[in-house]
Amino acid sequence: MGHRYHLYPYATGYLYLVAIIDLHSRYVLNWSVSNSMDTQWCRETLEEAIGEHGTPEILNTDHGSQFTAEEFVSYVLGQGIRQCMDGKGRATDNAFIERLWRNVKYEKIYLNPPKNGMDLYLLLEEYFDYYNHERRHQFIEYQRPKDVYGTAA
Image 1: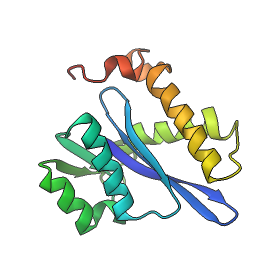
Image 2: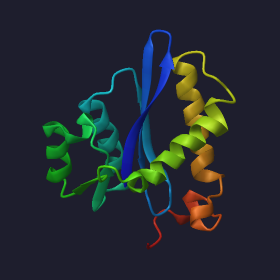
Image 3: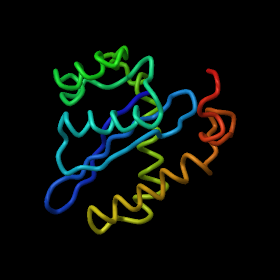
């Protein structure tokens, strides 16, 4: 499992996206949009993913303050999850999630610029459904994430 945030600028500020993704299958387990990038929001998104899909062995994150905060780290460790953070200066550590952000932007957001936060949410909801259930991924031999999720690594 891994997750990271990304942001979308608007006239009044930014909207942030966090996603929880299964690295083996590339299945997006949960995602959320917020106008504030805080620890509680990231934790709640992770809690929802765990509630629906179970507890992962390892959680990979970047070094963002949301993921290094005591509230987040305590929750992760309290669930028996090992937390792994991307190495400083190691761009390949987070390539999987950077690819997801690139796909979201180029396959959905840039083609359909959202007018507001609700429009962004609806676009993302549509995209992640497509991404998990229809889109074929080169990394997983052109299978769909839904077909690979839950199989042995």
